[in-house]
Length: 88
Image (cartoon, rainbow, N blue to C red; front, side):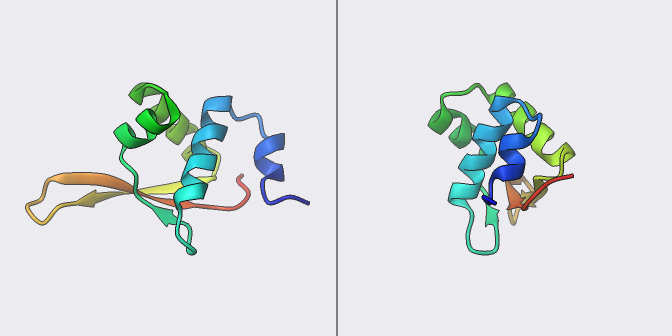
């Protein structure tokens, strides 16, 4: 069985599948990556709102976890994503 079998068989919208593969491709060996929404949108030729909806879909279905990162001055930085296997 393929690592991505659950993604292929899921009822996730195609936007979510594409963003999952993008995050998976950029994740380190522990599954973490932190691309900005703008970077994902630009690289995948999607709008920011489409990327945000895709991330929400992936989080709701248990394919990723996201954590807000902060700069030393307290300002928000990019999100930290943990790519998970499977899903709910």
